[in-house]
Image (tube, rainbow, N blue to C red; front, top):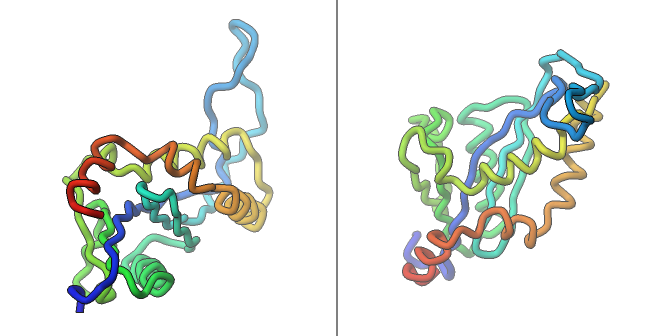
Amino acid sequence: GRCTQKRIRFWCADESRVGLITEQGRKLTAMGVKPIGQVQWDFSYRWLYGAIEPLTGKSWMLEFSHLDSCCFERFIHSLAQAYPEELHVIQVDNASAHKAQKLEIPDNVILLFQPPYCPEVNPIERVWQDLKRELKWRHFDSLEQLQQALTEWVQQLSPQKVCSLTQWDWILHALSVAGI
């Protein structure tokens, strides 16, 4: 059961859609000159499921073709299996994929639902912003090229980077008070 676990870990999880459509944004240009870049309007995309641990900076990421409860279930099971001796409290939003009735939650996982319509309380949103910043103005000819870029980004995502993006004082204080 859950009471016999050795260690409690607090994770923040969410999903982000990334696709072949060009992420546009600000670019340094001369005064009055609009940014110029190759833009693609292909709406093919992938979903990156992620969990980050603000306390240590660890991250767990998997890519899927879509967002649904089956993919979410596979994602949380993979996280639970990677660290089987620990109890995982995972903060998630109120997406239907996280609340599906047939969702099977591993014994060493507890889902902690954040308030509705409050993505700003989930630190992983800052990680997704970093990913989108990395993909800004990049052009991919295929989903395979996009997947390669995602793989490279995930591999370079260091614990130090995750900590710098997600170690908010109130989270660290709450974890300290909780003895985590």
